[in-house]
Length: 356
Image 1 (cartoon, rainbow, N blue to C red):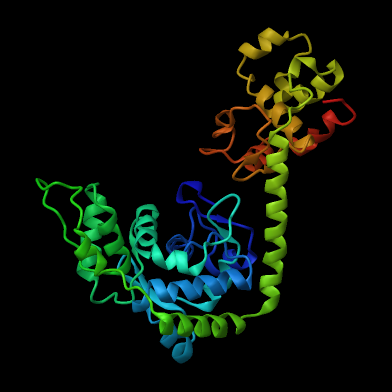
Image 2 (image 1 turned 90 degrees about the vertical axis):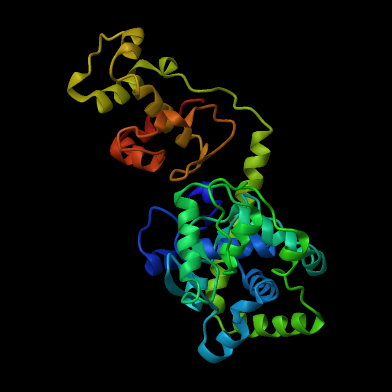
């Protein structure tokens, strides 16, 4: 998924079924990630994660009326996106299982500390949120708000963290004139009105609702992602350990035995292949990119690529991934598409038996 949005997802077949094939994250995933930022939850891989997210959302966003929605209509909350009213339904929660916002997600801070810093949490979430959507249960009353927020983003004006927060939770927004100072902040009294600090009764009620909601969802879905999450963490820890070591040897195409080099060049150059071409001549030719393709095959053979799509690679693999941007298959770096386009699986065994 798109890293600049800090939205990452352990593969979830329900996600594609629910939202179809998308270039970017779904609206529901973006809204949930904003809620995760606001509540200090860095992953939703198991029932405990989701229970804590719902619990803290009830405290951070009382206007969403999650308790009433759950017990009366069996959904979490309503929000609007570009003027369209949408619902966060339980099916969306299951489709978005596997979301995480840090490569190595940490456990949330304790509830008391989080509540003490609720204002700061909401502001920070607002600063990192995506454009064009609001976490608000009142789409009809917020038509003007949406137009104002669209105008802000279309005009590329600088706005404060408090103003972003207003857009997200559906509070009235002041649109500054062009000549006004764009970074003007609200005073403390004004912003404090936006944050409602929960009392002990609110906390007890939110715990009850979160327990009831999450316990009503199928356990088997959570079991899959709890196991996948543990595998992800193990992989990240392995990557960290590997980063502290060095490869015994890096790749150089010229160091390949001649018969194996022929296999690579014949496959990728086809009818243009010449056995008498010198290495320096090859590097000056239109086929110089073959060295990068061979490097990719070598790295995959040695297990240095953890994800071909994003991509995620072993930090010891000293390669400029920008070399693969659009290599044979349009814009962007997707090693799997490059691999498939050049049919590299047909020469994937060329390094078998070699030492590095």
